[in-house]
Length: 90
Image 1 (cartoon, rainbow, N blue to C red):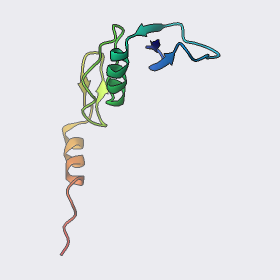
Image 2: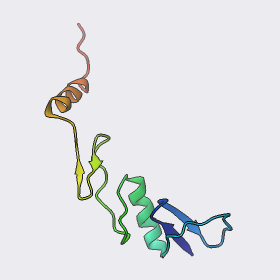
Image 3: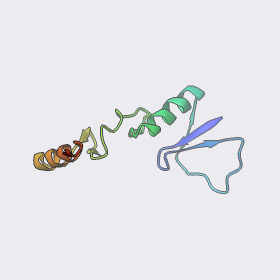
């Protein structure tokens, strides 16, 4: 049996002895384990009801409790975009 800790964002196998366990463990199914593991690996936010957000769109996005937002100004976005172009050489 696998359990999940929302606080630690970690999985715990009931067949393994741990010196300490978080107090918020929730029993999950094998399907939920795979689904939550994939969500964590995609940089999703796991909610209290074990649902999760969309994957983080970019390294710049931050979670604002409702949705992912990009806090950069339009000028900062443009500068970053320009830096992604290959340098021209003669």
